[in-house]
Image (cartoon, rainbow, N blue to C red):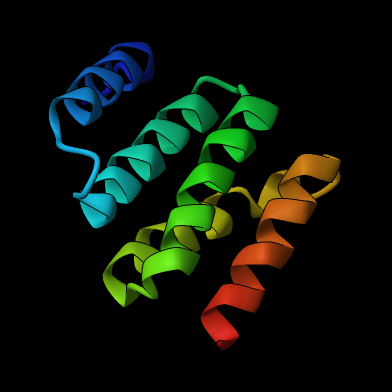
Length: 98
């Protein structure tokens, strides 16, 4: 989907359809939503959303959920001067080392 604004809306709506106990699925949708926010240039919002996904990933210790977060952190590398991006990237680095 080359419309990150629409993608964000779609991922938000889809995540709401899953039961609360589907934590890994929720994590993946949050990560996709964060990616859409990043592609819109909403870096701080993207980092906040990705932070929610990280919180859930730490709870369930899912490598499947950690992979997309790592990919997002790599895509955000050019924006590392933004404090929220730097913090997010550091947190992902810690997660992938564990």
